[in-house]
Image (cartoon, rainbow, N blue to C red; front, side):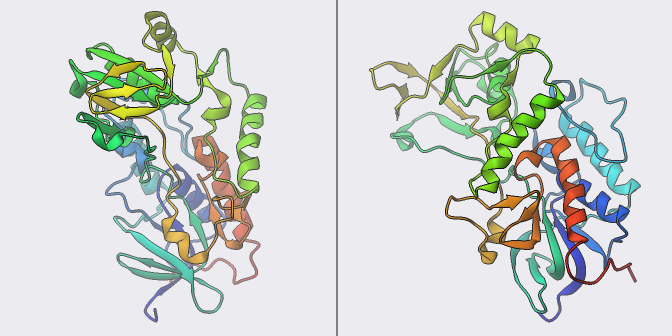
Length: 359
């Protein structure tokens, strides 16, 4: 594309990881324009937070860490997290003059001329010395396949489509998934539903007491080892366990969080196990997580035989011009901040021109 705009770094995504990266680019001397550009496909500031269900208030959010250089203060815990975080991200973009372009869909990243990457988008193309990918996972909800799934006469939906407990009033609901979303959905739905059933592939592990820095480092190291081997990342929650807060304690006491093993098949009117047990259901809610949204990177051929992209720190081993932030342990908000700083530091070491100020 001869009309592609020249830039030193393209940042794809303006969630926590993307904004952190942009902040550190500015601190390193890059300026919006010729120095870097942030492309975001969402309609407004807030990353994936803007799509969270209204009943997920800010007070229910686990471990929201502030962006670098600007604290989130005086947030009303009763307000929807989508509104609180959306306003915070918008204010952050203005304060540091990050000039996020939206809505922009990044369609493909491929090899360009002169050793640069060519980033093709819905509004034109950019040629860049490096790319920081911060697309997260919200756009790729994971739907497990199960025998009989297509025969179910009720409704099936994913966490990404969940809008609150009201739509489940008087219904029999099966919630599938052992992460934080699954437990939050159950605790909200149970008081209004006719019945709820909780199903997980593995027994849930609840964590008592504070989750200190040493435990956090150990958990992150387990996830990090997977991506070093070229395997798809797993969630940090899968190795840390679920926090045993008061709401969860009450749910356990009331029997709402009485977990059953994964069913073997779905029937037209419910779910069934191999031993013949059956639960009638009107709704199956899949709280089964998300996968990294990396389809636009396919032309670069970065995936390893194990199915993942091998990463050292944030740098893709197969192409050091590409950095993944918010992909592995950095999917947490505090991890995203650190990953943005690390990516910018490594990009500064690439053998190419120094940061270029905007004209």
